[in-house]
Image 1: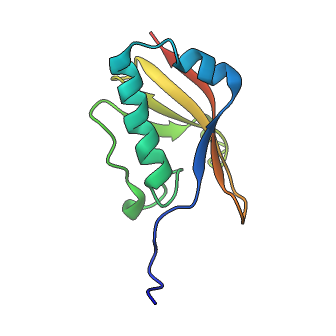
Image 2: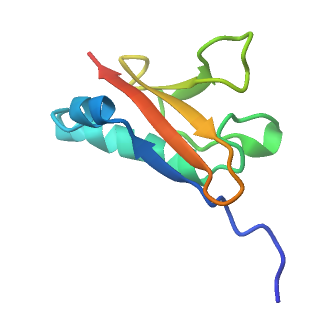
Length: 107
């Protein structure tokens, strides 16, 4: 049996208002959001602390804390060179850790 790290166990969930903002986005923008989503759910630490946790985000995307004084609080994943963002929180639970998207914006 192999006890190596098999990847994260968390899922991404959306609050209703974030899903309502996501659904009418143009298809190319939704594709960018899905690319960012894919990286958030597969990285070892969704807050990207440490060199081995750097995501392979698409060009023009980056992640930073919403407030520098609360590094474990909400984070913002910018996409489309800063024209849009996902605001999310990582809920650490033993049985079912989750990434909750609270807000989606694109201009």
